[in-house]
Length: 459
Image (cartoon, rainbow, N blue to C red; front, top):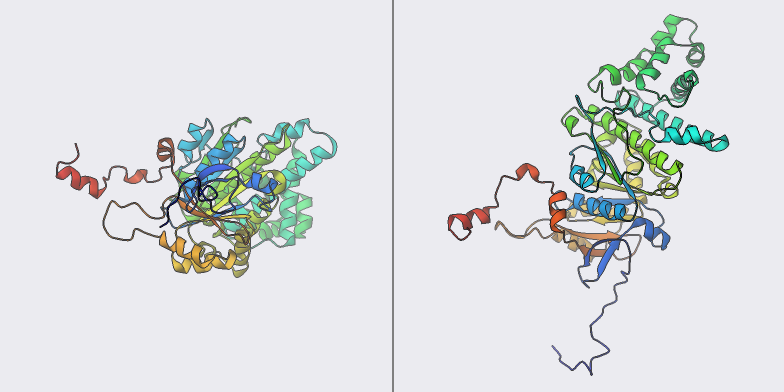
């Protein structure tokens, strides 16, 4: 230890250390080593040349703050003028936050709201008002979204990846429904597509090369029955009718709650998540098409539950997010483990999913075990110091109850080959209520509090 007067040590005080962390954005917390404030804003970082895309990959073990980070970021970006769109909230954990910000929450389920994933939503007005090439572009965007969704539903229903013949068949069916509409104010539904397939007009028979009605029905039976499950199967009434609500174009946040079907089979959940994602994509497209461009923040949680249900689904997500940078969208993917990627159906799917993870410009990591850190290191190299820090955040060091979890609210923000930014986040009282994901255990008191009560030390 050394001492000196401020006159003598003026050049050292206040003992500044070079951290290279002069970043702007949503206030997250303070640097663990220098205590300087750290902000995170992928859009601002893109403009400042710190990253090349606005994707965020968030990974850590359960319970240390994954959802907290996504919600803090969402609240801050909405404050900056973004719109937050939650495409299928399986636990309804975003509901309190969206309501607190004055947004809209729609519960999808049996006896609740229904969503037509093929409708144009707010894009309808933009298409009606547009002319010339702009109108053609909007219509092609809507058509592509519909085809991607229907292909994904067929895969979830048990079909193999569509070959060129069946893709052309599907596209012709969608176009025939389009041609039958007199105005763009009426939207497709899945039964509309199914009905034209059942009728089997000559344009569809030419694709299948069916000479008579019997051959056509036999060749298309499995294809049509797979799609018919959306109308008559376990999720009947949820996504096969016109949407039962309208959204406000000026809403700061929008969430589709799927908690009512969370405990259904994996195929039902996957189909519901895919439909919710397609509908939210239409909302995003419409926001970018009308008047003033508006930036969008999309937290994608539990996405792997949908991608596990069929080979090729990861392609649909990949195609839907490659243009985020050009569309003004910030997408945050979150997972607990890289083993979620290992559960995808094929090696090709797993490789593409790892590529999707690696391609994100920003990675945010929390407490993980050593085995998981080795997997992470394959897509985002970590220094020995960073690995040690993340491993130390796994769990409390002793079995004494009541101690603070060492990794809760602590993260390392990585981008490229730079040293990571270790950040500690402190929540406000309002955030502690809005972000709480442990409501199921709200009636259970902490054991150290119970012990104090028994000893009469707490009133």
